[in-house]
Amino acid sequence: MTHEEDDVPRTPLTSAVSATCTIAVSATCTSAVSATTCTSAVSATCTSAVSATTCTSAVSATCTSAVSATTCTSAVSATCTSAVSATTCTSAVSATCTSAVSATTCTSAVSATCTSAVSATTCTSAVSATCTSAVSATTCTSAVSATCTSAVSATTCTSAVSATCTSAVSATTCTSAVSATCTSAVSATTCTSAVSATCTSAVSATTCTSAVSATCTSAVSATTCTSAVSATCTSAVDATTCTSAVSATTCTSAVSATTCTSAVSATTCTSAVSATCITWFLQCCRWGETKSCCKQSETNKVKSKQPLSSKGNKHIFIYDC
Image (tube, rainbow, N blue to C red; front, side):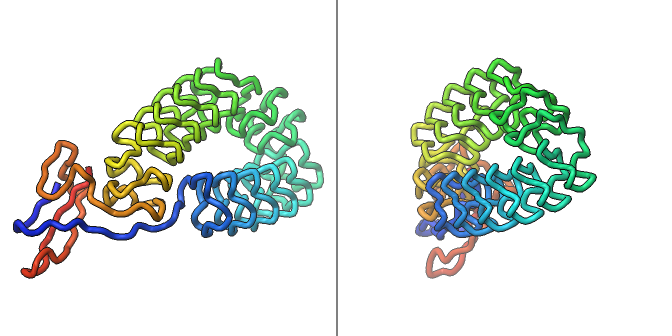
């Protein structure tokens, strides 16, 4: 909704949006993308050629030892070898993190391969002997059972969870870093975080909310694809999700390049939107119109000054929907 001081010719405000996909970069984000582009939830194609900060969070399996020290700091992949610097494997140290790595590297829940050569604080948390090299560092933190295998994700088995953590397990069991076997049959809250690829459209709306997988189709409810929307999030999705009339907050974070259209509101594509996303006013807030979808609030009011006529500058208040 807008409020003008005078009735004057109406001209839409346009501006270029940043050409970065900083958050939850889509699968097409290749090594040619700039350093900050793939920072969060890096796609599988994000290779070692990408700069150091690119793969910092949720590093993909292809993030090899050639990447700089800070690259694999968080959620280090299995290929993060002893050649990587000391701080590289600090968090969620992989099994290949050997005694050659510095003392602080294996400090947290080190696997059984962490030998006596490592410093005294390395094996502090009574790691069981059956904690094998495939299991991530945090997986065996709390006396994990022997059946905790490499298939289960790191935090999944944190609290003595067995490797047979299947879809039959209660909702809270697989909530974080759900394993691949966590299927659509599991309750809504089970796959909420780091949803696996098998998390299909049949899963309830809140299931795929975060880090939605590529299989998250148009059948999923409106709130499902809100964060880190995949490229398959099509126009068939609920009106408030990824269509041209998308609400201001819908595509804010890491919207894919294909769905973010020119009809999206000015604030929608502000963060991590692709270059094809052009700033336009949301359709329901067209000049002079009052729609129920528009609300007046001091928190979302954007004050813009632009020459509207030869009379000079006028103040226009634009409200996000």
